[in-house]
Length: 393
Image (cartoon, rainbow, N blue to C red; front, side, top):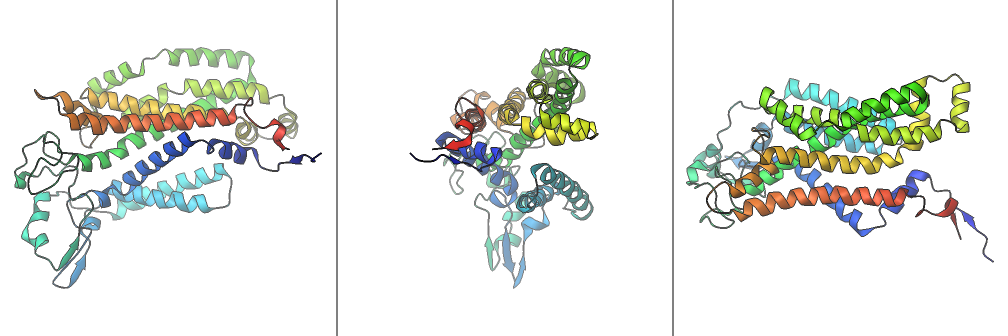
């Protein structure tokens, strides 16, 4: 008889291994990674200006000269995230270091990055940029707000319908390249999903943790507050704020986050009610540790697993909310959005299929990917599907 071997694999490592075992979650993670790549390197993937060029022996990089403050901050934050990920510290400290690094990057970028106020994309097709020794253009040689007036664009045109310059996904109503706008729109979807869910998660952890730890009157008052916020119709609240205060991506993030924390609070409350009687929690209380240390350093890491499932679904819901507003014509106006492009599919007398297939397909694939990741986490965390006591025979 073979002697059982006790696994020394940590709980988080086991959950991550079981999550990655499925095919669906791998597809979801690949899609999200592709969106992140497009969002971070959008100026280098789709732009009307050369990445590098040489004129009269002088080498320059126009794309860097015209890099916006937002572009520079996103790039810097991405590399800060990679650097922090390589540090051999626990997850909470990694998040803290990343937030501090991103805040410092925002200050430096706003101080030192000064792009030209006005960008005329027609100039990049003039003799100053065409009669050169050599130049390297982005894979998609059109900026998202380059309306190609000098090329005689006629607005909505199907893929490959224009002679002389190819648009793989056609053009939108103003003549801009759809593929370029699709790439840059990844930023809207990812940012509103992650930031809105982050706000909701922070509120939910604090409120749910206090309810679960103290129980009694605190729990009763907290649950009444949860029920109030669960009854708030987020979409109609967004419509009201847009009508009164105008369109703002940051306002959408805050409203979705402030109204979406109740589900996270329920999860945390449920876990903390089970954990507060555990021996290690009682030992932490007897040792005189501060409440924040007991809640967030000792209890939260042991009750965070169900939150991973809820967060994945919450991100998908936030993306759908923004897409719905943009489809109704109430989204952001100064940046490309999948929902706004989807609205153009039915604006004219004919059905513009490319404006429905590509933006609509991207919304579907993104929400589907997050749902696949959430389902995989749920299956990995479910004790009925996990290995018994971590023992392998």
